[in-house]
Image 1 (cartoon, rainbow, N blue to C red):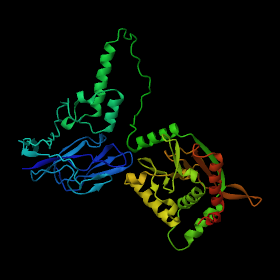
Image 2 (image 1 turned 45 degrees about the vertical axis):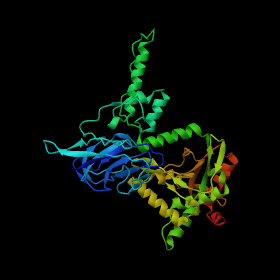
Image 3 (image 1 turned 45 degrees about the horizontal axis):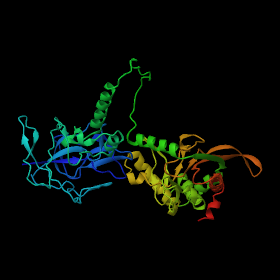
Image 4 (image 1 turned 90 degrees about the vertical axis):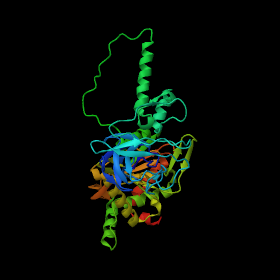
Amino acid sequence: MAQVLEFKLPDLGEGLTEAVIVTWLVQVGEVVAIDQPVVEVETAKAMVEVPCPYGGVVTARFGEEGTELPVGAPLLTVAVGEATTVPEAEGSGNVLVGYGTGTPPARRRRVRHTVTERADGAADPGTAPEPARPAATTVTAPPAQEPAPPTALTDGPVPVISPLVRRLARDNGLDLRGLSGSGPDGLILRADVEDALRVGAARTATTLKNPPTAPPTTSTAPAGTRTPLKGIRGAVADKLSRSRREIPDATCWVDADATELMRARTAMNAARGPRISLLALLARICTAALARHPELNSYVDAEAREIVRLDHVHLGFAAQTDRGLVVPVVKDAHTRDAESLTAEFARLTEAAHAGTLTPAELTGGTFTLNNYGVFGVDGSTPIINHPEAAMLGVGRIVPKPWVHEGELAVRQVVQLSLTFDHRVCDGGTAGGFLRYVADCVENPTVLLRTL
């Protein structure tokens, strides 16, 4: 006899509560091994391959490609060889971000299923009799073709996994205990809550003594292609909107003669050793400037009405990928030299384009460096990466007329822009930071004084 185990979307860490199915890596009826990746999902942070902690035959998949699932929702069911009782969190011992299968939780539940042969030869999961043990719960995985029937709940725990569903119900005053769930095992989904809210709104409308008699208006929105704001794109939209909504930002900028910086980089790369990137030199200048102006390496705790100044620099940098803009973070950038910064920038950039950045590599930044000059533009007004306090923008370095040593000459000129949270400092501090950066760009030997 075989046992059917249900594998749910694991906790992916960093507060992530949902993920979008991008690509199924296995088919129903296919044999999978323990820790074999079975699906590729996109979270608000990155693309992740999810390994299955069970080995056996895939009997069902839940969700088509493009479907958004909450953490804890069923992903697939696997028929294993022996009908044994297996704790829900035991299995491979593999760890995926915030999800580990090696340590059993304090409370376990038993999953008992059998697999029988249908007339067409396909595996058909059936349910074994429920054991008479009050501490365990029997879970039956439905066939892929037939979803479990809705189950009304009147007492006991509410079968809701997604915190978004709970919040939607709470904000609209809906009691989930009287709601029937249409998901597997009576799981209450977002669609169930929205349907209940629509029914309630319709009932309220019918009780109005003077309902409106005007015909419904027809939407005049122009037709076009609609793209859902979800995954990485949705996370970027939410973060940028929050930044503009909560942070009173201001921007100052200056043109700088980068000729000597470019010459210094050329001399470094002519010597033996790994090549040094321009971004690494700019990052080294940023960390030196933050050491002189630590007010900009901070964030505002709005609830406590406090400015929190940080003693470490985790430097984020903007990277444009096929999936959208991401901001990988170089941890402890203030402790790294130019060679170490170059290597870490290269590693994180490659991972960003491959879609393999982990949530830990995309969070925790304290200051961001944005080199938009690679797009061929001179200037910009960067939006602060919430909850940070500042972002330095660097335009393209191009030959321009410049007065050098009292004479007009053609020099390599760059525009530097600093957007800062006006709550953490005034213009004098921001101007001092930007002027120091410009001085280091124009004369890199200035940086030697702080090394």
